[in-house]
Image 1 (spheres, rainbow, N blue to C red):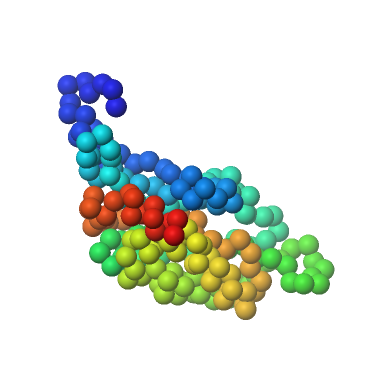
Image 2: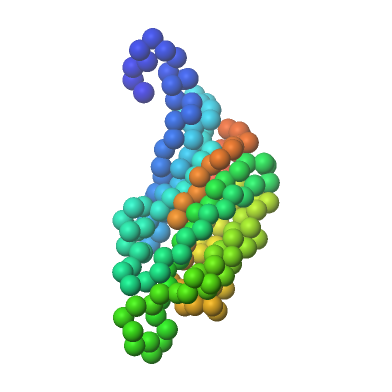
Amino acid sequence: MTKSAGKNSYMNMIGRRYDVNQADLTGNNDVGHRKFIFKIGDIKGSECVGFFDGMELTSDKHKAMIKKWHTLIEAQKDIVAKDGSVFRVFVMGVTRRHPGYVKKTCYVKHSDEKKIRKIMFDVIEEELSGCDVQKIMKKLANETVGKRIEELGSEIFPLQNCCVRKVKTIKSHQTASVGQQEAIDAITN
């Protein structure tokens, strides 16, 4: 920041959000479709200290996963982290054809869709609730939630492209002491 317009530049920086691509954090271009969002909580010298504020897929990846003649199944659930932060997790999955399926479409019955959505709720609750923020970020980076949903949901109807589409921060109890470097270490390790 170069000009302050009569304001303290320190206060202008606090609360700003910025996106960091997972490929930039890990050096692996295969995961370039996921963006982690950090919020600046403190400034130490000339460095900003940020904390986790959300995650989302890039729009091109999200739009490429949705297919014609398939059923899109979406779910959202609020989870509470170990420190009391509340996150809203959005997940999605798309049906795929059975092996040897002849029809062009592969729509799922509404009752099966409800069962798959229940599995999505259970997996989100089981995997992410009660974890600390670093562990949540690691699970989001490794896509353990999406893989688990795809594995369990495919017992009801074959699924593909199951993933966490977005994570929003509803209430944050994080401080600047839980810094960006710890968050980056959680993703890369």
